[in-house]
Image (tube, rainbow over the protein chains, first blue to last red):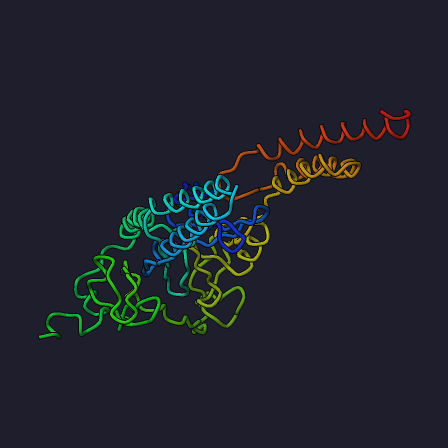
Length: 166
Length: 191
């Protein structure tokens, strides 16, 4: 049996929980409902690309939480006797927002193979994702080797090359 | 010719800058970074065609008598033609062995899901503690479930037997407790 090591934290999505696990030759995306587990394996030799896309999800959540906190504080000021409850709830909202802000911006990470592109829900915070991807990149390069500059020129937009611009 | 790398959101072709750092996509302005590996440039595997047996000395495939054998199955040793050769991480198997291995769970690569029976047993045990006389059914069921699946392969991931042990302990306590309570209530004139 392949020995798996934890690669990421467990993250909820679509009423399920996902976590990434690392084996010798592949990375495993395990999604659980608590009673059943589903597995998707991505072999290092099959991975074509990893895409990271920064999203405004975390910032949006922070703005919403801050707005709720302001509304609650306003309610506390204008409704007599509700100050303590409203201030406590506002404090909780602000604490969650601060906690969220501490972990930095959010992102979406997708892994592409010859047959599929799969989103990795456990990778949601950009900073943590970069750390994990750096680890994966090393393993994938150890398995596949490096891409050459000529190959990079082949797959990037022609207008972006200095020679083409001139 | 390899495909261009494109923004996963708007499918606009990306520049080499996107391979080095998180940069804005020229079209949708989403900050994107791509890590590209040599597999991107690999041409798709050619469609395999099984050759006909040409001479009497040629070995034929176990499944297709008229096709030339190219490799033996690593599990059963049967000769296989290019069509019947299932290449699994460098090992060659015949369709029959693959099917058997999949059914019996011998090839972990094929396992796409598993049931956590320990979690099922624990849920039944916990429910039995506050479902009153139903505990007399659920409690023993939790114990039986935990013991029945004790040695069955559970999760592929590291996991202890703690849930199964807890299910047995809670199931026992709940069954005894509710059993005693029910006995007292109905047969012994109340608690």
